[in-house]
Image 1 (cartoon, rainbow, N blue to C red):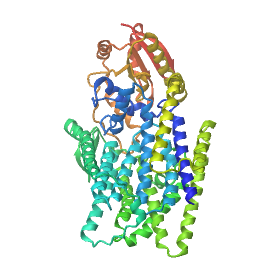
Image 2 (cartoon, helix red, strand yellow):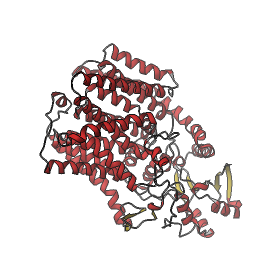
Image 3 (tube, rainbow, N blue to C red):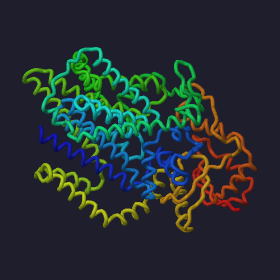
Image 4 (cartoon, rainbow, N blue to C red):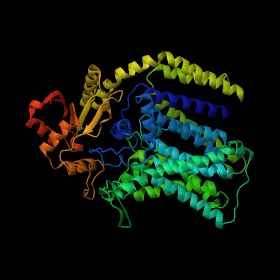
Length: 614
């Protein structure tokens, strides 16, 4: 079983790397949210300065003011490289870092090596995580915050001076990832508070530390604890900056949503999120959230739901009766997932996007690992070995099924060859050395990889650039064709373009492949600014951007718009008549009123590109 577990980890790691690399190396950013704000905000900051205010008229306003850890990292990558290729590796790196934290947490929680390896192998190719890793998003950053908190929480059992700041780093990452991170940060802090209360008022009955646990502990110099405390304080201050900025600018740390508590308004905003009840408490919505969601690449499917919820019940069955003696495992495996679920259902009853549930899925994986290991320890004699073997066999079968499904996606035999090569390398024990030999081998392998990559980098970049707008045309149809035409015009002119846009929130490709272009929105009147709206109960989340856009764009001042167009220096006007985002009937009417000033360059399926004649 030990050999099988090692093979599983290597195969899972190779498969995850190959699958993700196949997507991020040869595809431009294609995720809708990536093109709306995750990359648009950094591209705008390149021209106006880091954290400069950004107005996205056809969005709901939340992304422009939310915490922006990932967007800041993307900004520095764009600033240093001038393109978006490396930004697509942010989430994969977070995925692998979260998997490492997962394995370390299980080992610190007394899970055996084989069980931990099989679990981390399955986690590496868990479809909701892999699907999210191939887009520029901030959901795996939120998952990494939960992973870091869990690792620090368990590490503090033996290394309090290092575990506590590590756990606080995880809380800071949750707060800095997105507004939704506040829910999971509250769950983490509640779990930590409950643990401290139990340890303060109830006599400790801590189980003895085994040698196996101690081998899992990191051995670092003492000054690392001081460095960790500095990092934790820095991350907390950085995350707090975004909330304080909103508080001092708008009087609301969670702007633009109105914040209420028990029916009392605490902070005013543009809209009341309580009216965005999309599904209420129907059984179908609950099933989609936590048991089965067909057609959603980030959703939980029933085979995983059975295993994860079964693991959670196993953790509850074994740890609740022993909560005084197993307080830390009980809090991490039972209290944290339950608290996160309850807070999510109480505070976000209107939204069941499965991306927002990824931290809960991660916590359920931890619960399954801790619960199964504790259950095996509780059963005496030979039955424990039999139960352990059954669990590990089930995990192995689950892993092989995952591997088969994902390998179907790999269309190039090069990737199959890479998986087989890694397996053979392990089989022949070529990488089974320890200490300095392993470090030397890794250094040589990385050096050779970088050396070989240098020969192909320029050709790879050229081919990727050539395919960029062909792929955009495939995924975004007429919009992708218009983006390609804009890039052709920019290449032919040899200068950056000033483009005015309206009608759609997807605007990042307008900046061009090298982010040369400047993109602006032209207000229809002096009152075309974000303003409060009254949302009707039952309004869906998808309807909100249209309602907000119509509210601010209902008044049209033709002279004001014309002066804005001339004074801005805009050369091109990109319009996308997207009804779900409010449309562009106002701009089209203004263009028809003076057709001699606008030359139509492209028109297809509601997408227009005009050249403005001065």
